[in-house]
Length: 246
Image (cartoon, rainbow, N blue to C red; front, side):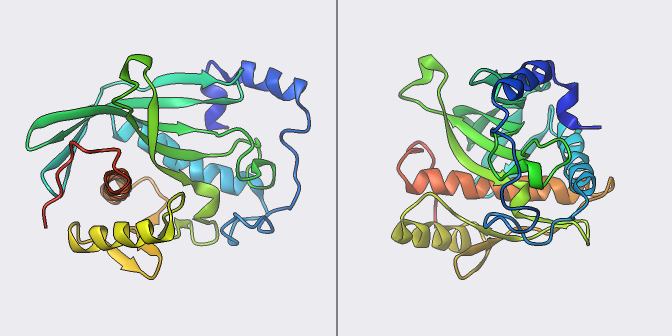
């Protein structure tokens, strides 16, 4: 069963598809899209079940949790996932609010989302239900806090990283959306100040085997994604209240 079918926004999304039949079509085919991991299964239900296993785990794992990161950074999650839908039902999913702290002082609010992003990643050639699957970490924009606007810390599209044959996620994660010289600075800070593994242009995330007994590894993986996102925003000058010591 598709993780998305349990959402109240599912019916609205399907009505969107009826009105826009060309939005979710297969163009390249499995493993042929330039954005794919190249080790997806040709059986789309296999890909779907593997990532949905992670979606269900993350959904049950994070509420009420606190994550301790280097540099005395803490992430405190709320106790309940909420639903979101926008753009006339094109994008649906769930989000879990969190508070970002450092040295036990509150810095700002944020949220982590499990969601599709419309037809990003050509989901019709990856998943049986043609829903893309993303984990997105966001922080509230201080200047636009009254409008509840969020900035992306980082996006993780599972179509890029799934190795279906070995039921795991590929560890090489490339930082996108920033200029080359800024990317080099981000990678340096991640390695020098946060002790993350870096290889060339890639951050090496913890390898995740997809099974129901990997909670510890999955939490560590999410911690790494937070660190990458926070350093990225700090380096871009959009998280000025964060302090990073050498």
